[in-house]
Length: 373
Length: 249
Image 1 (spheres, each protein chain N blue to C red):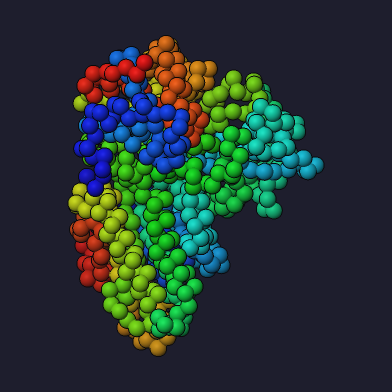
Image 2: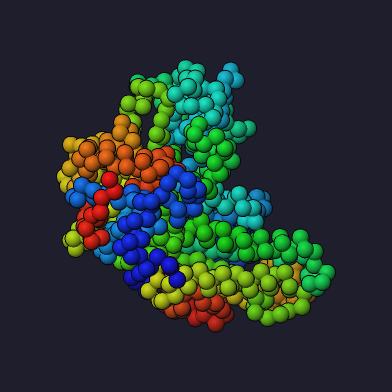
C-alpha cells in the first residue's frame, strides 16, 4: 500500500517545510527531496515535499519524462605526445560520430573554469583511451578549441563495452567523491544519451510513480541527449545549450494530444523535456511530431509554450540558462521571489538538490493560496 | 491495451544466452524479428554462437558480463538499450546449479550457496530493477524468470539451486503484486518452469539421464515465446509450466 495515496491532506501538502529550519538534518532519501510549488497564475508559492507530488497534480495530467540514461561520458585519454586529455561526450553518436568537449590535465575535482585547455588538436589526431580504444578527431569547431567530433576505433557491442569499461559519469568540483554510475540514473532510464543526469527525475521513485498512477496522472517518455552544463570556456558556455538530439515516440504524441483534448495539463520533468517538446512543435508549426529531431530552440521569456503547461525542475538561480527557460512559464519577478524563498528555506540548488514544480493552477486547486512571506 | 505483444520490432535482453535454453530463446526471438542482446560470462561460447546467428542476418548482439557482479548491472542494462533500444523483454535465464556434483545441504559450502543466490536471485533482482521503470513508464514490457520444479519440490542435493529458485518465484509474485496483478497491467512478469531439458546444465546435474526423455530447448523456447506473446492468458506473477502451455496460433 502506498502511504501517500489518498492520505494527503491539505495541511500536510501545504505546510510541510514551512517551519523547516537549517537545524534539520540534510535529506538524503528520494522521499526527502523538498519541492517548492510555484503557481504563476496565483503569483504565489508554497513549500512542499517531492514525495507529495501526486497531491499537486490532477487526474488527467500528463507527466512527460526524459528517459535518457546517463552516459559514462568522461573518458581519460592522452595524445600521441602523452599529454593528458579528458574527453566529455555530449550525447549519443550520430552516424558513428560523437560530439565531445575536451579538457586539459586534471579531473573534476578542479573547478571547470580553472581547468587548463586541452592541447590544440587537428582533424586526424588520435586520442588513446585504453589499450584497445582510441578516438580520432574528425571535426573541430569554430566556436571553441575544446569542441570536437570524434570517431572511435570500435563499433556496436565492442564500442559500448569499451566506453563502459573506461568511462565515468561527468561530475563537478562540488562533488569530489566519485559518483557510481547507478547513482546518476533515473528509475526509468533506458538508452544512454545524456552527458549529465536528467536530474529533475530524481524525485520520481517507484513509490511516487505508483501514487501518481493511482491518482490518475498519466506518463509519457521521450529521449533527449541532455548535454553538459559547463565547459570551462566562456565562449562555449555562452553557446550552451548546444543543439541536442531528441526522439519523441508516436505514443507520446498521442498522449499529449489526448491530454490537451481533455483539458489536462502537460507537465515536463526537466528542462530537457521542455526543450524537446517545444522544439518539435516549433519545427512543425505548432503540432508535435513523432520522430527524431535536433533541438536548436533557445527558450526564454519571449517564448510562448505551445505544448508544455509547466515543469518539475531543480532550484535555479537568476543568471543560469535554466532560469532563463523558466521565464517562458512565469514572469521574472515571481521567479526571483521563488528563488529567494527557496534560499530562505534552505533549499539545495545544485543538480542533486531540491525541486521546484512550476505549474499554473496548483495552488488554487489546493483550496486557495497561503503565502509564505 | 491489446492482449497480444507484437514481437516484430521489439527488443529483448537474455541472460545466460550463449547456450542451452537461453541460446534457443535468442535464436527463436531473433527469427521472429526481435532485436536481441545476449549476455553471458564465457566470451568464447558467447561470441562463437552469436556470430553464427549474425551470419544468418539476425539482429543479435553479444555482451560479456557476470550477472552476479553488481557493478555489471547498470552498464549492462544501458549498453543493451544503446544497441537495440529500450528493452521490452527481459529473460532472466542465467543460472548456476551451485556445487557440482550436487551436494547435500550439510556438505554445501556457504560460499557455494552465496554464489548460487548471487547468480540465480540477486542478478535477476538487480537487472529487473534496472529495466522495470522504463517498462512501466513506456507501458510495455515482459519479464520472464526461468525457474525450476526444484523451486517447489524438496529434492535432496538440490538445496542451493532449489532455494534460489523458490526465492526467485516469490520475488516474481511480489514484483507483480506491486505492478498490479490485474490482467490489464501493461507490464507482465512471470516465472517459468521449463521442465527437464537436454542441456549442459542437466548433464552436469544428472550425467546418467536418458537424453531421449528430455525436452529440446528449441521446443521449450517456442512455449516461452508463446507466453510472451500472450501474457494476459495468465495472472501477473504466475508460475507457468512450459510443458503444459499450449502454443496457440
